[in-house]
Figure 1: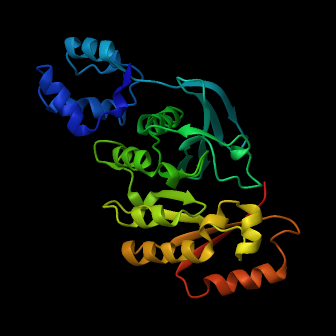
Figure 2: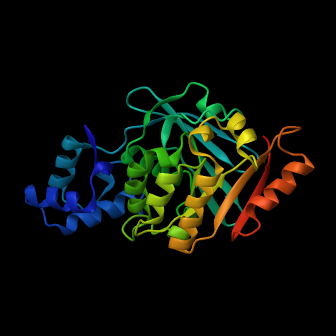
Figure 3: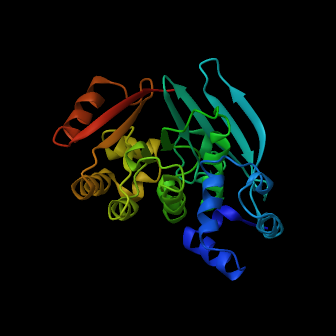
Length: 290
């Protein structure tokens, strides 16, 4: 069955009216899905029984199955979700003080081929649907007590988010809406290895999210070795698109740099990185390799 999460608010209202239910029932249903954390249609007690039965016979609420979970002593919790077609993805809940940050995936596998990342070892299988992206958020939300809520979203799981931008934008619009989880767009960060055209497209959206660009090298020669797709783009175009993003949205970018011993962590790399970013309004996140 089709996932109820695939329907936009307008489509949900239209479905209600087509089946002789008031349009306001769509908003009630949406609140149950997000704020109400309802795990099944039968728990949506302020919806008429006839509507609940019709929803059950027409739509699925969950299209994923939690096949593995792991919690670290610091409270970080990882879920492995199996999709309806057998593919598997990962999503993570990070507990840090009062913050509850989730990290979600956008693809089954990844086509970017970064040499230090396990997600792309087998390439990319397919893009996730908007419903499968939203479902990760709802699965992770279920890990929280009733009085806790997700505070931040990082799109930095499996896959290259900007390679699945259309479905990601639909999912984030649902999650950040007032009828969804109401999370501020300033608390949503999209991470990319750098797809210039998609960065420009993201900049021109009505909703302005935070952007993190994974550099990992200060020049094209080294970056081509670490991120093979860089040979098709190049740092100059990536940085020009990133500058356009800042100029258009006013949102300061974050540049990510993973330290790989004796590969990109020498003094000459640091000086080249400073030269690359010194005139830009940006945050540099230097990450020890895990």
